[in-house]
Figure: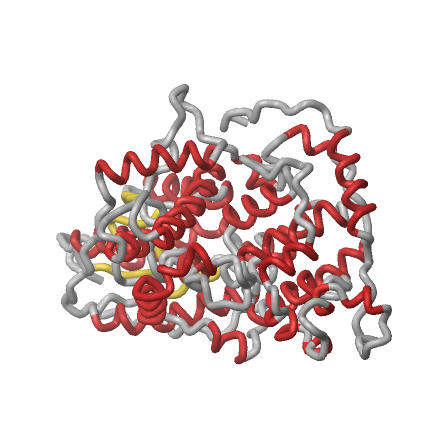
Length: 488
């Protein structure tokens, strides 16, 4: 394929579907002629509950990325490795075929990801092929931000403090974009428009999430130009465009956290803790994302469907399939919950404040296991990310790090009045309630069903008695254990 002294580089793309500020890609291209590969792993994705709209988003981004790489003469190859166990053999065969001497990859952090990468490295090293790994989807390497006693942080505010000190000391820089290379005699593969077992989402959903780095950059720029000033005050109001809408792009790696951090600092004169409160709040959100990925590494049990706080494994969750289905389908009779669930089902995304509200309703008012909610979210979210989704669910259900104290249970009605005062969000997603005034829309049950809301269900649960039931269940738990180290 190439003469013996040309050292072929392979970049294995995963959740880093971009050209700009891509650490592994930049490093590969700097060393020699480069080829990119992406593995289709539908069996693994199903095991991980990846949403069809998320898989579709990956494919659409690969299509755009393939064209961008093509302009640099970097071919993008697609290979099938149905399960990650197949990855070592598939990559070894490709390396032999192309006479690759080094494989470059950006680190990923779930327990299965870590095992997959270790297995690939072992197989390739045995054949004399080097594997180089890079820190890319995080600002700090897991294990580098630790408490004074050398353990992973369990409390976000303490973690954030150390991150701030680090960032003041040295800001992670953006990496170089590769220059065009001499053409290789290798054609890029066509990108499938669908993967078996994952239906293509409706066009209306796809239109909400255009693929490609240019779109991600456009969202970042318009957010940091204007919206970030109002972020702190408006991010909790689901009817307002108060959030950056970048989560799907971050989860697929279409934009990097470094690009986001630099943009936020640039609009805030380089400040982390002062200046625009919106920018500071948004940088905090980037650090929450960071925190939960560090938790995955430090406490691998959360990757294994286990509670971060072991004593909460003893909770007597209810088996209530009909109530679970009502929650999933947005027919609980509580408008803010139902509107939020409809938003998720139709757009592949849910407003962050509402993610907490619906999660607390499921785990506290319905006393249904948080894992049911975590799985349902993953199966529908376009920005589904194991670390953030698990972290959020365990926070809401009081089983996680730094979690809400168990007696703090959001009341969906007061949350609704507080964050959707005029009922605009509710009326958008539940048009059958659009005739109600702004007081009645939050709680149509109190109208006694006489006012033309006959097609809207009565609440499936009484908020007061269900709150008392949750408090009783949590009070009966054994005393809090200290969370163990990452050796379990």
